[in-house]
Amino acid sequence: MSVEIVDIRGALWSFWRRPLAYARPGCRRAGPGWRPMGETRPNLILRSEASSQRATFLELFLDLVFVFALTRVSQRLINDFTTDQRILLAEAGQTLVLFLALWLIWASTAWITSTLEPEALPVQVVVVMTVVGSMVMAVALPKGFAERGLVFAVAYVTVQIGRSLFFLVATRGRPIPKDPAAVLRVLFWAGLTAVPWIVGGVVGEGSVRGVLWSLAVTVDYIALALGWPTPWLGRARHADEPIAGEHLAERYQQFLLIALGESIFVIGITFSGGGGAFHLDRTAGFGLALLTTVLLWRIYFYRAGHVLPDAITQARDPARLGLSAAYTHLIMIAGIVLTGVGYELFITHPLGPKPSAWLFAILGGPALFLAGRMGFEFQVFGRVSRSRVAGLVLLGAAVPPMLDLPALAVAGTAAGLLVGVALSDLWRSQGRAPEPAAPPI
Image 1 (tube, rainbow, N blue to C red):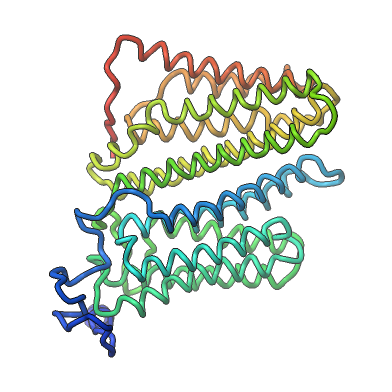
Image 2 (cartoon, rainbow, N blue to C red; image 1 turned 90 degrees about the horizontal axis):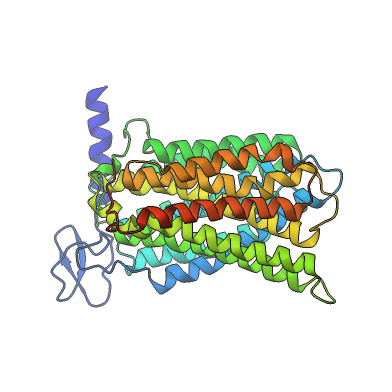
């Protein structure tokens, strides 16, 4: 068995190292592959120390697609909370599955452009493929568990498998990572989970699709966290992967700002679409929504969000910290999106009777954000501020007394608790030098 494994790995290595059977204009044969005339590096795919840490314009273009995608997630959640005769838990769970698929596409792309040269043609083609596929997913998302389910599933699978196949062809002769089987591992798992994705899209609406897609997205996330363990190929060691820490941190910061921007969009559309005069109760809701958004921004960037680039670059295992930060940012962004749903609810119906389920958005959104922020703070500083723990506990304790109060009062309570967290940060920083990053990883 050991000889067989060695032979398989050797064959894979030979395939990967074999140059393409054509010469590109302006290139000459050099070592294992082709290099442009005058270029001294044999590999143009891996990032180098000279590579820019800033996001490219193409990456920012990709972000525009996800601005639209988040609006579709938010609108679907709003429908879950406001449409009659719906089972909220089941409907919100379906929206969560769709959101998780979108986030995995974005986060994996950020990882690709942080480990490979984003200006290299193969990487740019992969980002363009992601733009197209993500846009199709976003358009199909509102009806993702209805008649557009197969479209969503095919777009997701095409992005996941198509990118890996393209890399296999476009990078022959250029060993991308230290581990030549990295792309093959990703391709194996993408092909494995493609089955429940496609079958779920074909079987039609209902709980079967929910079960299959929930299983598929769970396996996708577990495979990523474990390094895509694959028969005969083993698992990837993220610690061995070179990573542009500043670039990856900036990408996370930018996506969180996208989520905050989507909340601003919800606030503006909801308040301006009411028609007529700006009534005092709706105006108060508008003000509370803006205040809450500013507080979420402040709490994120003070101070862990601000020093995230330093944390990743200084970590003993930068790749592991960068990967774990994807999960805490996922939680925070989900909290922001859910908070935005609360904006729609309490601006539209500030004083009228409200279903108790609305508390899940108005109080649960900020609570989910604080929970993710606590984990993120530990990743950056190796500790958690008591003010964030207290804020999370008080948001939970506020649920029973808020059941019979109007939505505007609930929103004011949530904003007041976030004000307390922000003021605690301000008080702790008085007369002290800015705390440097101290990642425990």
